[in-house]
Length: 450
Image 1 (cartoon, rainbow, N blue to C red):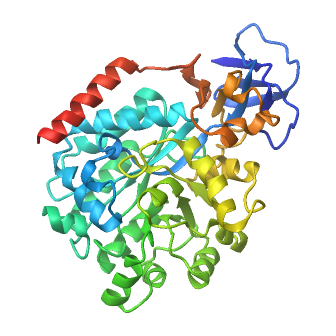
Image 2: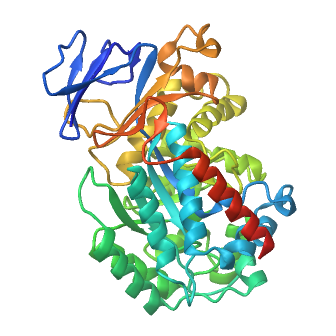
Image 3: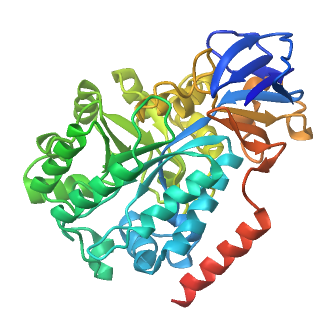
């Protein structure tokens, strides 16, 4: 399909500053400009009252947690206690059907907030896991037309992982992990800079539920097949304490010794980082998924993203799980990232354009989607049209960044992923909102009963 987006109020493009029109053909952006004439075979999209952004790229999510929002027992707990009270309490009860509805809800929320790519850190794997749990995530993404990067979690030992210890979850063997990884890679993974599916090797915790030999074997597998590598690290200072106790070295050094630093690796959170850690991460090209909402919600702290960027690290944004960041919104993450660092470092710490780049182009490059995340001719047509022709935006003097400045709620009028509509005139393609709501409510009731 070919489309011509016309008469946008503003377009976030690094190459054509005054563009109002965007031509799309064969999944790519083929022309930017003003007063472009529609071709006979093109569908015209009226963008009056809209600003156009590149699709937002979420580099860390836990879609399974979309049906675990606001669990009373975990509302005022820190990370370690919350793990036992919320996600690991319900993990063994998540069936493939529940996973499917949770994934649809999480992806729906991303689409409604401008997201077009999701990196889901899916960790529901144990000794007797059914492959249908993972299949449900891929299925939901396919149905909604989302780019899916499935970060395949794992644990080879219970170790010091409080959630696994409390709920008696039996980990996989390293042989199971590699065998199951390979089956997923063969079935789902695609190579390329604008593909719809990628698989990532992603042990859930390097420090608390993985052994060094297993980490090295997973790193070797990832690099043999050129897969990305991802995990949690230094979300709380307990990571550093446990690493020193168990391995006699700092967490970042333990990661490096196990092959888990490099330009093919990124970590979620990285809240508790001093200059030594930042230098080590930056010098190896290791990346970050900055998750400010979840870190605030759990009282974990604020990742030193400004210092990291100054050291040469590329900052990206993730919504984390909806059990610890109940909004599930990429726009929420952009807005809070813009504000929170200014609160600490002053009003020049972050700019709107900088944070929008964190949430789009930086994230795409981190995930190996080199042809995604920027409104430039030749790039994949992942675009979001925010409708700002509404009262709450009417007084804004800088329309292009109005959705970021003003935050939620906002309205996505159109969204394109690889040149195909994912949101059409405000409606999510391939999804009935009433049906989704009913299925999710049933899923939550089933979890509570079980």
